[in-house]
Image (cartoon, rainbow, N blue to C red; front, side, top):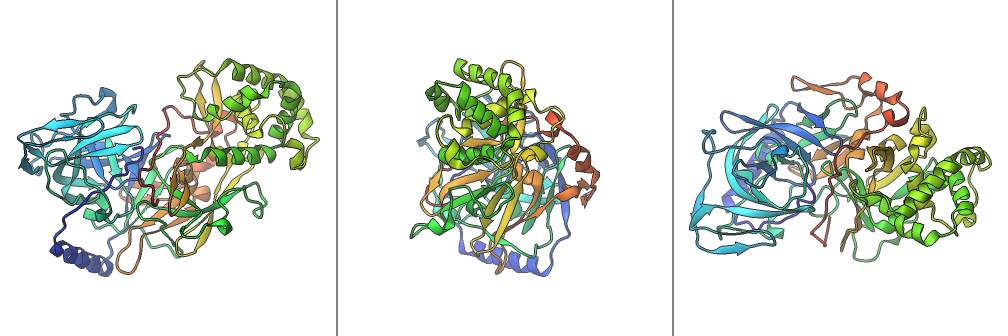
Length: 537
């Protein structure tokens, strides 16, 4: 799921282009009725039931707007872990299964795979952030809810891998932006032939869809959804992308964090920063320096953090160790124990929390910035305070305790919108290596920069808990575009008998929860994404 970013050099006959144009005209004249499928909540990602073959074999595939390929684990994969779940059997069980076999005696190598066969199916290597997979190209019937299509050369069978990925994982339903296939490189393992590999929604002639996650229930994948009145044209060339124009911490929208200022865009660039809304990524990722700035702003606007920071400045004498280790709390694997210096500082925070609560009243609006610019970093204090949240979070509603975050974005057409994340969405809980419940910011450092769109942020699952993301793949004169509607008190609703049913009680019970019960509990390692295209998002 991490960063399925590969490109294929295709040899597409001219008649295929005419066929696709005819499909577009027919779809515009006769739009299908709206349907849906439930999205199973795994916290770190959501999956959708996908049936493949005749008779159908059912799988839970990751619903991933960051890629555009349909991948299922094949039962011939010997190195695939058993805890991944079900695997697909094509030739022996599906009467509609087909795979073209080519004769070839060449050996093709990649970083992790090498094969030599006299004959075999067309295959490719797909790069992920956590490794690579080898996939063979096949054809078969595929159904998602009531939407179905025969995937001619569009079913990718995972037959080998070098992924470091815990289960469950049965494959990926790519819902990414349609890509001009000729822009990239096609990696072949057994053939020198080119082939078009369509995504499921392309094959099923789906123009518009939507995604939304529920905290306490299954989410909803809407298919053939209505057109939204205001759309943001997708930025970049490869992914669903937005023009990212900074973040406001707190209520004063006139004050933005000191990064991604659109007025500072260099000549020749499309955007100063880019943002990818990605349902297949668990956290929100961005450059380390920008995350430090954001964490400083959050602490500055959170009275408890300001007070704790003042106490730490008095108590902590040796700050170099804390500066070096502070941000590592964010990216440190759960299997690693915290460094002794960090544990000492965390214990100190617990000792001074009572003082901090009393001191917070002394800073109702926060001290001037110059008063906190020296000494320990406020970004360190924020992470340490969250790590020790068990000492203060009981009975606390984080939405009242911490500031909200407003992400300012725009489309390539200039349409602007704000995406607001409350604290209960951008803070998660998990179990530490020593068995304690801790809180963590739903952010992770990831250095990604493109030539046309600058520094890249990825907005993962937190976005889809607060908004229904609407995607238009583009037909006729409509270009690929997005829209976002707040979930408010109705959340996503539920998918019942292929119909989206709104039900306000889905989140009202969660909205009343405080303390740890009000937070999403992370039970698996977060799914991350990396970019390999350095020109554009």
